[in-house]
Amino acid sequence: MKEFKPLPALPAPKDTVGMGVWVKQNLFPNLVNSMMTVLIAGFLISVVPGVIDWAIISADWSGTSQLDCKKDGACWVFVSAWMQQFIYGSYPDEQLWRINLALVVLVLVIAAPNVLQKELRNKLGVPMFLLYPFVCAAFLDGRMFSLEYVSTDYWGGFSLNVFLAAASIIIAFPLSFLWALGRRSDMPFVRSVCLILIEFFRGVPVLALFFMGSVMLPLFFPTGTSVDKLLRVWIVLILFMSGYMAEVFRGGFQAIPQGQYEAADSLGLSYWQKTLLIIFPQVIKVSMPNILATFVMLFKNTTFLLIIGIFEMLSTTQTALSNSNWLGGHATEGYLFVALVFWCCCFSMSMISNSIERKLDTGHKN
Amino acid sequence: MSSEQISPTSEPKENVIEISGLNKWYGSFHVLKDINLSVKKGERIVVCGPSGSGKSTMIRCINRLEEFQRGSLIVNGVEMIEDVKNIEAIRREVGMVFQHFNLFPHLTILENLTLGPIWVQKKPKQEAEQMAMKYLERVKIPDQALKFPGQLSGGQQQRVAIARSLCMSPQIMLFDEPTSALDPEMIKEVLDVMVELADDGMTMICVTHEMGFAKKVADRVIFMDAGEIVEENEPNEFFNNPQMDRTQLFLSQILEH
Image 1 (cartoon, one colour):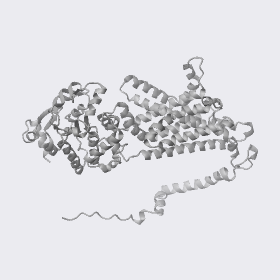
Image 2 (tube, chains in turn green, cyan):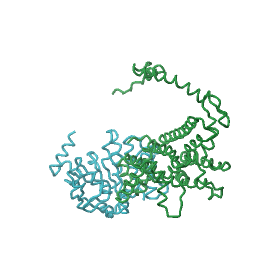
Image 3 (cartoon, rainbow over the protein chains, first blue to last red):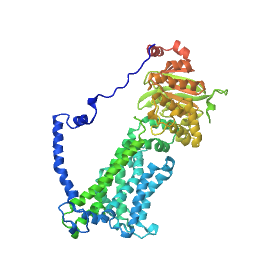
Image 4 (cartoon, rainbow over the protein chains, first blue to last red):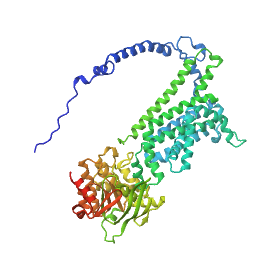
């Protein structure tokens, strides 16, 4: 009998690999695309040097007041002079360490699941995560920790955007999962309640929700109690976020093959064991890109709070722009700075989500 | 509980499954019509029939993946009723292997095997892992323990699925077309494991079209069509001397190739 010998693998032909081939294939494959390449290159050459000159070369970087801005370029002095306001709002100078500490802890809480071992992750990481918003709020408030009391009227700036977004996401995450489960439930009452909640908070514009939160929500609290404005906003954000996330999770649920439920059932797992051990991890995996998109949306939506007079970053910027010492058109620098800060944060969130996706990928294609 | 329990025993062969007058409808469609079947401990039963004949639906009723509307079903002395505790008790005694393996893709092979013992039977992790490795050796893939299901071939995945069921020390094993989604080269490795399991005295109900397997291990072959049991007999009689013309037609069609 003859032996079967596979043919040896040959190197790819020379004219299909290399730098020159890449340029030809991607930049000048045909007439139309070549023209587009030339046009875009021309546009970049005419615009980019001007932007660089304005933003960097002819810009003023150091100083303390408007008078230090003498060149024609950007006046970054405006940003540096107001930096503390932009980041911390009116939080007292000597207490800023509390905000810094809370931010560091937030980073740790987010990083923990990636660093901790599997056993510790569930026992330590998850409770830490869920407790963070409450402990953080109490810590910034100060009374419970016998620190100096700082009323929420003084909280503000970019740190407030971060805290509000993080605190809402953390609470909305489990809540929306429950709503999504409820929407799939066999029990008609649970199902309709969840359906109404989801559709209400998804269907009403977020600005309308904020106004309702600041004007209407107090009507539902017992008379005589006054509930902090920021707390009301937090509740609105949580509910709004939950409505969206519940639908994201629902999409994830539908991607899980029926066989997974049957396999879990046939092992004798209870409903909650099946849901938390088998279904939840897989739903998270399929929904990761959409979960992130919802996070980013909520994070950016926190700037809408300027409408109801919460001093988050955008409204701090507007206050700074209308300050009598800084009149003179620093709007471009101010808004550019806000945009840059938000973009950096959202981009890092993208990176984190990509790394989580890679981590969850176990090479299984359903 | 250990695997010793599934070895042949001399105790009286009582019925472990007792199905009587079982009827099931999907909406108004009558899928199972008056099914009567009893299975003794250690018996190996092969169920065959054309697609849509209700054979999968019937065995899925046994661990209540499907509900039925009329009739009674007793598994291992426990009557199946509408009660979560009751259903979970029956499911603990019945292992099931699916056509599409249904391994948990986010867990390693070892975690797939230990999940049931740890969470349902509340076994310590170490004990569960030892037992899992024992069964992985039995299905001949102990070296894959730390991989994920997506990294294994279909035949290996199906053997893992069998080991996963065995880890729960079931009294009865149900196989729902375990080789239908496999390449010809992999069918054999799965059937070999099933034959070994049969030789050890496990009570088995297999929905399969592998007639070679049926001839080799079955104590009884059941032929179903249109939601009914058309004929049941021991394999020799069934294949050589079928009583019903429907059975004859089916056999001539599948044995032609």
